[in-house]
Image (tube, rainbow, N blue to C red; front, side, top):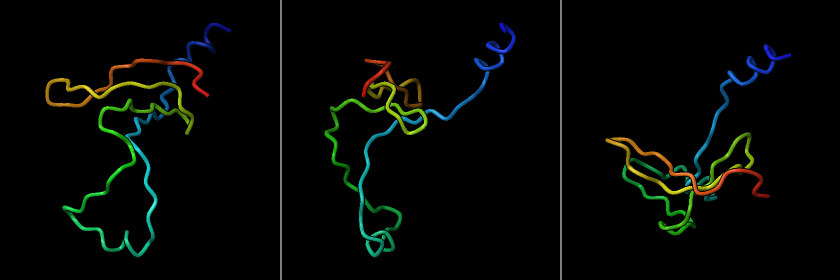
Length: 80
């Protein structure tokens, strides 16, 4: 049983940090080009959602880590 649990804990799953979502007509999407800006309905100071299997499992704030972005978790767990 412990070996099965160890195997499960080694599985890699996609974790998504979502800045926001925006819907637009296909005609507008067709006109997108490099340099276009898509405004998101989220304030730049708002926390970002962390999703696993399209379900929010946490929230946090964007941080700079050397030359990369990261996320500092502010909450993790059941956020229904």
